[in-house]
Structure formats: C-alpha cells, structure tokens
Amino acid sequence: MASTHKSSPDEAAPAVNVRSTPIAWRSRTAHYDCTPPPLQGQMKTTLIDETKDRYVGPVEPWQFLQDYLPCLNSMPTPPLKEKELEELKKATKATSEKQMYQSFKDTLKRFAKDMEFMETSKNLAEDDSVPGAKPDFCLYEIAKNPKNPEKTDFSAVELCIELKRGVSWDPFKDFDLKKNKGGSSDPFESDTVIANDTRGQITSYVVRQFYSQHRFFTFSVVVFGDHARLVQWDRSGAVISAGFNYVDNVNLLVEFLWRFSHLSPADRGRDPTMSPASKLSEVTAQKIRKTLNLKVGTSLLKFDVPHKDEYKSFYGPHFPHPVRSLIGQSTRTVPVCELDTEEPGKMAFLKEYWRPAGVWGEVEVYEHLKKYDIPHIAPLGTWQFISVALLGSPGRLHELKDDIESFIHVLGWTVLCYLLGPMGKDDRTALVSLLYDHSWKTLSGGEKGGLAKGYALKSGDYPPKTFTLAEPSPILELIWTLASPFQARYGDVPTASQIERYDRLKKKLADGFCEQEDVEDHPVYKYLQGTDRLRSSEWFLRTIEDALEHPGWPVEDGAGDKLVVFTEGTAKQQQRAEQRVKTESQLLSASSGPLKRSTTPPLPALRDKRSRLDGNSDGGITRE
Image (cartoon, rainbow, N blue to C red; front, side, top):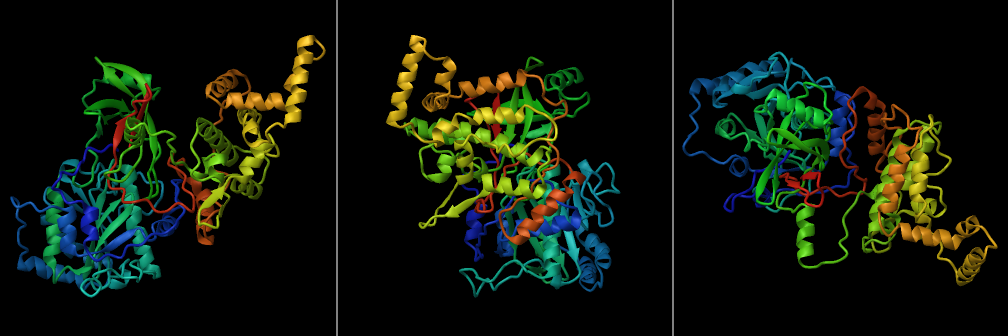
C-alpha cells in the first residue's frame, strides 16, 4: 500500500491529540513475526499475546471523534427518533447476542448513509483459510456490495461491529479520566478469559481486513451489554475510546456511524495509490503479464509510486502473501513494470512496508546525510543477519563487508530453517538458535552477540558441515565458498614469522623450486586473498553467477514448511511459535515480512505508509 495521505499543517495529528488525553502509555518486549497463524481459536490466542500493551486508551469518546472522524458541518447528523431509542433499549435487555441483533440493526442502519448494514454472524468468510471469521455486523458500501451476501467478504468490509451480551466481555478496563489526568499504572487490557477472547476476536477481524485490502488503518466498534467502545487500528496497534453507555449517550454511536459513512475512502483508511488496472486494454494487460511471467488472466493493479515531485505508475499483480499479524512493518514484494506508449518497460521490483508518519524513508535519510557529507552511515538490521563484527561491537562503523556478510547469513538461515535434511527438529532448532539468536547483556546494559557465527566463519565451517540435505544441491557448497573470505576477517592476523616464510615460499616459486599450489595453501596467501575479496562485491557476484550455471540444482527447490521453531522469548511465546510451525502446512505460505527478535522493542505509531522509487537502482522501487 502506498500512501498519498499527507496531513495538512492545520490537521490535528492523532498521536499528539491522544497524548493530550489521560492515557496509560505502556510498552513491552515481544516476539513478532509474519508467518501464518494457527486456526481460529489458536489465532486469537496468538494475537492476544502479540498485541499485548499495543492498545492505547482510554480516550474520551468525543475526543476520539474529533481526532479521527472530523465533523462535517454541511452534513448535520439527523436526530434519533424516540421510537428508535426504545428499540435500541431492547438490545440492552437481551439475554443473548442473537436477541440483540435486530434491535441494534433496525435502530442504527439509517445512520450508515450509502452503506449496507449486514448481519454476518452466521456467514463465515468465503476466502479465508482460517475458519470461524464471522463478525456480527459488517458495513459495506452499497456500490461495492460483496459478491456473495451469504458470506463475510473481508475484501469489501468497511467496518466490523462485534456485539457481546454483557460488560464482562469488555476487553478493556477504564480508569477515571477526571481523577487520573496523568494516566494510570493499572493494566488497560482486561485479563479475564472472556475479555481476552473478545480482544483476540476483534483483532483477528482487523488482521483479515488488512490482508484482504490495501489500507493504512481501519475502524471497528465493540459492544458489550449496554456499553460500547470505538476503535481505530493500524500496524502499531489500536487507539481505544473509553466505554460509554450507548443508550444514555446514544448520540455518540449515532454520530460515529454518520461521520464514518460520510468519510472518503482514504479517510476511512483505504490506500488511493493502489487501484485495479481497469483502464488497460486486454492486449496491453496480456503484454504486462508476459513481461512479468504471470499466468493468463492474472488480475493487475496500478501502483502510483511517489518519486521526488511526481508520481510514477507501475503495473503488477496483487501481493502474493498475506501478512497475518497486526503488528510490524508488514513487508511484501511484487514484480512490476512501467508502460511506455502501451508497451511494457523493464521489469522492476516493488517493495512495500510500513513506517511511522513523518519519518523519512531510507533514501531520504541517505540523501540528507550525503548532502552534509556525513561519512560512515550505519544502517540498522535484523539481528539474525547482522555481521559478527557489528554484533560484537555495537556502534562500530558499518562497512561494505558487513552487508556482504549479512547476505550470506540470510542464505544460511534460510537453508537451515527450510530445506529438508536428516538432522532432527530439536537439533536443527538448537543450531539455528545458537548461530543466529544468541545474545547477552553487557555490564552497561547493552546487547552483544555473534560468538557462534564468528567461530563458524573463522574455522571455515559455516554453515556447519554436520548439517546435510535430503537431496543433493549445490546450495551448501555455494554458501561455504561465499563464507570462506571471512576466515580472513575473523581469523588470526598472520605473524611476522609467517609472513617471512611466505615471502621465502614466493621466491622459491619464482625460482621454480615449488608449485603454485604450495603458495596457495599457505595461510598468509589465504589471508591476503580473503581480505582482497572482501574489498568489493565483484568476486561474490561472480561466484554466485558461476554456481547458478553449474548442473545439479533440483528442479523443485522451493522452500517448504519451516522446520525450526523460535527459541527466544517466554515459555508462552515458545509455545505459540511451536503451534505456528505445526499448522503452517494447513495455511498459505509464509509472508516475506521481516523477522523480529524477542528483544525488539515495540514500533512507534505506524500510522502512515510511504512509497518511493529507489534512485540508486534501475529497477528497484521501494514503497514504505
């Protein structure tokens, strides 16, 4: 999803407005990933754990409306009729959710202008690999009614409303906003079984809405007995209104629905920079499919990517892997191409991910630093793939060889996690954890790691040769070869006596008294060769190209199910990770989202997602 939504100078920034209200702000270390979740009940439990302390509130309800649903003075909200109010009161006296449905719908549907107010409590999602997704009510634009009204269609849903028959189902606990103006230290999230279930349930609906649509954010309503809460969601979590009695304060619920139905699609969270490529002729569309190696009939999207002071349009398929977690950057990639007089241009690579509103993307940061001649820029990285040198010396200057090493770690981690071999799951998990996850706290409170990776690289045993594959493949030999120059980086520097003997050996070679192989076997030669190869990426690129030309690559060598589980985090997090692995084969392939360590702090408010054309590459596009 690319963002064209930019706050005007006098538009209130939601995060600032929220902080002006008495809210309990909390953070938590958690282990997040974008692998497919377990089935419905387990998915809710997983989301409860992943999103703990990601809910901000309580926000005074009228303040919530002011911040997120600006008032439309030209479209005043019609008053609620006395008969409608009496009908709504019936919902508060119901002894079951089912008894609440009709009264709730009959009262409020006229305030959702130009929207279909549909009861979906019996209608499971049609295209959902995880069964059980059925909000009590869904609002759809009348012009975009779901194809099958008997099924919940998360690709078209604008708003989900969930009803519970009593206040014990309330997923949150308010504190007195007047008495606790500075917030409260008490947990905002209610920790009872049914409250947790409700919180996991409403979060699971939002996750499905996000992966079925192209959105920055969305809204929902949760009703429990005679009270309700308004919710605004994005990839950082959710902002929650204080609970309010929707009969005594009926104007709040009516006002929310009226304002919501009058918002533009962009103000309801939809991404206007991604749209169906409906204006393409079928001939042109098929040329694009052929350029991108897509199947005949694959639906295409138009991506408007901001580049400097203009937008460039690219065409490509939908993102292939749904991101099935609420939290994180939700990185996805897809091949695209431009059009030049109805002819497809060169194929490019589109990457999208989320970042906080107002925060520059990488290109903007690097351009700004370059403008002021700032040297030795140190990019951030994913812990598992950071070089041994940087893990062992936080704050060390970042070099090209660090990036080359990170690439090798990505290859090694992927092979160990996904390719079949005789090594058992427990041993494989222990090996992956030892090589990539291990860390320790320093006396100053910092964090270091990389000892096992460093030893493996130093000894020329990366990845360890005890790991073998079920079917022959050149991939392990390739990684061993690519890793070999790092023996020079992490091994011992040659001593003066070794250098002296090496110089004598070279003289013997020149005089014809020894063979070239004798020189190349000398440790000084290997050290000099390794350091030379680490000065650029040329040798590594040639090595990869040569390896790809060799025979022996399996025809079907795609990654299978993940064969290891995460070993970092609490016992509960380990259990969740184990369950994810067990159920992956039942679901879609894992997303290409970023892997997060258990020590990664929560992200800041990810309210906006930006896009850009990468000016450093002919074919790289980054959408953030």
